[in-house]
Image 1 (cartoon, rainbow, N blue to C red):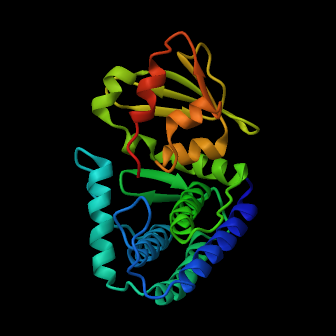
Image 2 (cartoon, rainbow, N blue to C red; image 1 turned 180 degrees about the horizontal axis):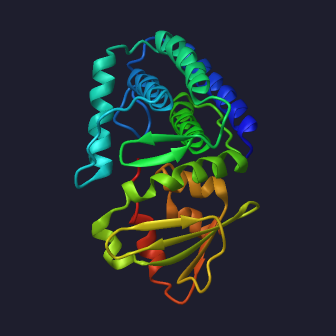
Image 3 (cartoon, helix red, strand yellow; image 1 turned 90 degrees about the horizontal axis):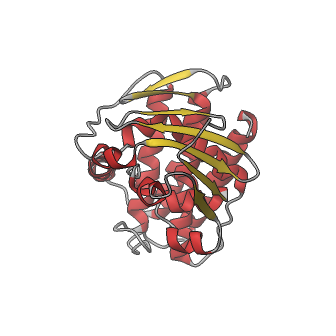
Length: 264
């Protein structure tokens, strides 16, 4: 997805999310599948938007991943939600509209500009892709709670996947890397190929190409891959439906690869 199209997707998906928030009285209703209320989910999106604004503006924030990136990020999210102190869905919709526009303004017009996140660097284009992922995935959480349709198309899923690639070394589970080391070929159907080299010490390198002599091939529908990766769909159901298929000279890696990366 080109950068202009990605910006438009962020605007459109953000408007869909805030539209749902405006339709919610209060904000105390529990979100299906999460430990948050709707108000806490909205607050999370506002605080993540502000992180993006800070980083895109040359500022930073402190986050120590410790031994578990997932656990420490979850705790960091909860701290920021509490500090924001706003759980009214309608008010959060107003804030998110403003912050989403501010994210796009802060990211600017140059998709190749580099920005510095805690523990890694990424292009503006990558950062926009990850922010789109936040809106899509938490929009899905909200839509499921409110029993509304929430379509996600392949182009959106690919943009999120590509945006996440620079951050993978931060989210690798080093304890799992010892048994999941190898060269992986990821093929997103209808889009392209990616090569992931995973070392036993947890170092990961990613290139947008088809690797020579991979240990495991993974062919996936982009939307299914996104939802399984974010824990919003069951991997075994996706495999049974043929949405994700794996084969290769080290087939046992197919069982280890899904647990290699902690969810951000």
